[in-house]
Image 1: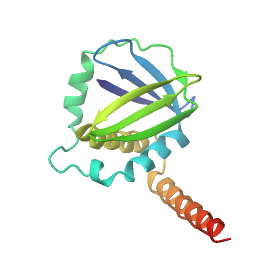
Image 2 (image 1 turned 30 degrees about the vertical axis):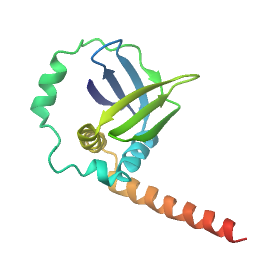
Image 3 (image 1 turned 135 degrees about the vertical axis):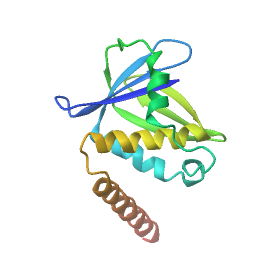
Image 4 (image 1 turned 45 degrees about the vertical axis):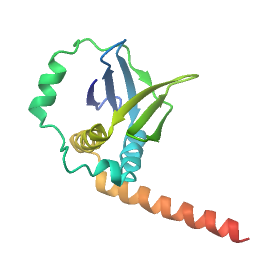
Length: 153
């Protein structure tokens, strides 16, 4: 599968195009909040994301892989949400677009590559990744504290 991401300043969104080995390609508009939320969720997968034997591919190889992909992407669909499910050998991303979502499986090695791509594209878009992840970490801690407080009462 080939993944392509490109920031569109007019939309203030990422255009994410998935080209599976078999089947039709899909294109999605992913908001900044969704993109950074997915990046934050990926950091909660340390056993999968920290794959020392499978570093992210260099950009030149990614360009070569995507050169074989049809250059005309399908009409992008706005994403309502992104779900992340941990599998025994990787993760499944589900892009919720309406009644049904589009699921994509990533192997353990693919998780590290996906996380690197998410980080790189967010930085290219000029999004303050460090501040966003710190804010999301603080919100996670605050939500956990509130949940614990509710359980005590």
